[in-house]
Amino acid sequence: MKISKNNRAAVALVGLLAITAQASAEIDLTSREGVIAVNRKIQCSTIDNEETTYIWHGKAYSRKMGERDKQLFGLLGMNVRKCVTVKNDKGEAGYRLVSREIMLYLDPKTGELMDTWDNPWTGETLDVIHVANDPVNQRPSFGYGRDGKVIKLPIRKVADYWQMNVEVPLFYYNVLAGDYQKYVGGTYHATEIFDFYGVYDDLVSEKTTTVKPGVAWVRISDWLPWMEMNGREGGLYFNAQGAKLDSWNDLPKLMKDQIAKNYPEYTNAPAGDDTRPNETSWTFFKKVLDERNKNKSGPKAGH
Image 1 (tube, rainbow, N blue to C red):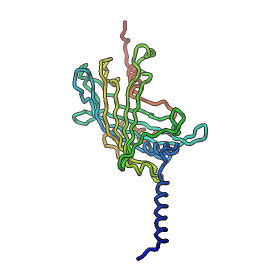
Image 2 (image 1 turned 30 degrees about the vertical axis):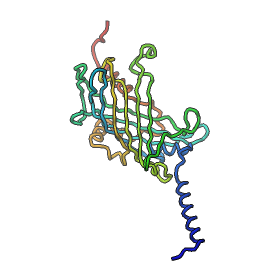
Image 3 (image 1 turned 135 degrees about the vertical axis):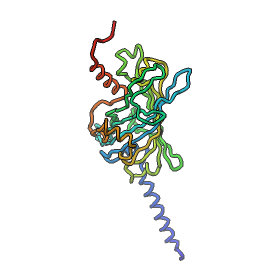
Image 4 (image 1 turned 180 degrees about the vertical axis):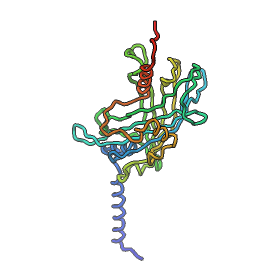
């Protein structure tokens, strides 16, 4: 069939309009609204109160001068979360993320849950205190950085995929170290590194409300307080791989069994208007230790 010049022009115009419409359906990653939408997709969902769950598996190693690194634990973690819309003083819409998380320490050989741990440096057998941080919430985000400008997302497009690296240096008051940390040391010092990745078209599409990224997580920190290392040189590094699940029910049986037995509130995220201070491994340990000391009888040691 022969197509006239006018018909060919019409077909070309339709194709051009289709391409233009497709392009306009992509989120503008340089706009404030685009920054918010993309971050919500990665972290949770653009739909308020829609809960999502992340999982991660990994290993924890010791690092001390003069000796080989040792794998001390396996890791199994989860974080259940959601986002809610909030507004700033200008009336601009942003979002707030609320979550709670668990990380279990596993026997590096059997993969079973550890109740006790034999410290290879002190010879002591210690109770393992797993991570149970409730809440782990984020400050409201409106797409601006500290300089008041729209955040430049650290997202790269590589072939059909997107990648985003996030480094979080941590240096703040240590609840276990007293009131003179500036003078004698003891400040909490760690670094967390997150490497997110996924399908680019899903991320920038205006039709999707969430994405299912993979994530690599690295943590570098001092010894955990329950290890009772008493100031010994060295520290830990964690390396884990994770993803956002289709459903909370996709968590491994070990995690779901522990939640049912010990952490029933971790089937859901906190309330969107949760105002509690964040929990960390250090603040949680302090609560456990204070409770243990309160229940101890007999005179306190001293001189």
